[in-house]
Amino acid sequence: MTDEHEADHLPVSRTPRSIARIVFGAILIGFACAVAGLCVGATVGANLEVDIRVADNHGYEATGLLGAITGFVIGVVGSAIAFACLSGKHNLGS
Image 1: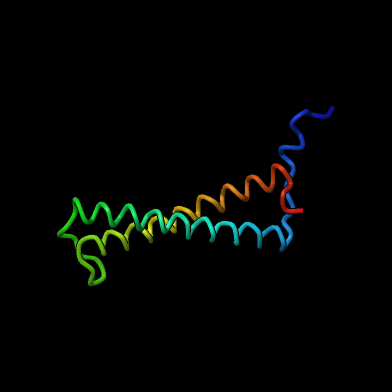
Image 2: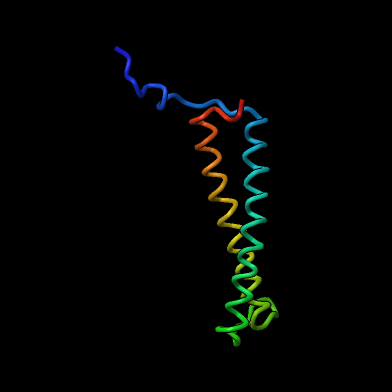
């Protein structure tokens, strides 16, 4: 008795090459998200939060820094999860 969805539940073997692709892609998308976070953070800091201080930065510089860090972390984690799921499902790593 074979199940139609049995292939969906099989463990995926990851090669060093597929892991490197996941890491490299996640870092690239992380940098893109960091740039977007920097732009959004600087805009918010320039217009709304002018009194905030972070790491000796004030106003738009501080919120831009926070936006860049947040964007990078969200971009790396989110894209690494997405790439890992996609590579297992569609066999992109081989």
